[in-house]
Image (cartoon, rainbow, N blue to C red; front, side):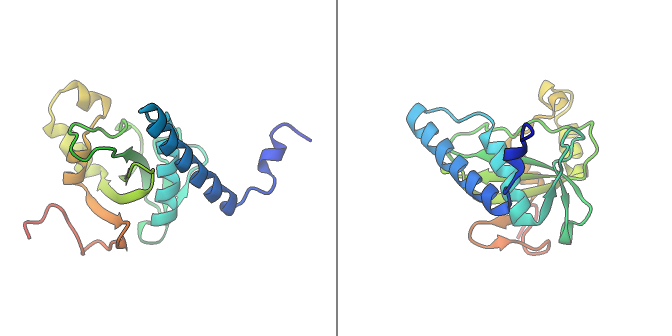
Length: 179
């Protein structure tokens, strides 16, 4: 058997779903036991959930600034995927992972997860809106690093999925409207 061959045989979508479910369970238990998040897990879970819930195809090579390519309503769209677990809604200043502003992508999807690493909401912001928000931030060090708060991302983005409603069409909800 060639190195790594065992890892490839029999691994279908069902197996990946089971592995992600186990990763959720372990990450939540680790946080409850240690008080700290398990590093790297939320990003993998967020990518899996975004692909499954928004009909995205994950890229094999993620070095180009794009984690997934859209299908269906998002056909051809190059998407960065970020995930954030919200343990305490009252805590301010929570940030999303670094946005790769210099890379080639069309939108960013932010998967918000609860303390059990289950998706509760997914927001999507288009590149133009993100770049505009970064310009408004001025020459700050955060802007240069591609850093943005969860609160700011929610303001400039559109809610595209909720646990209660599922996927939300473009015209149904816009957090920038006055109504």
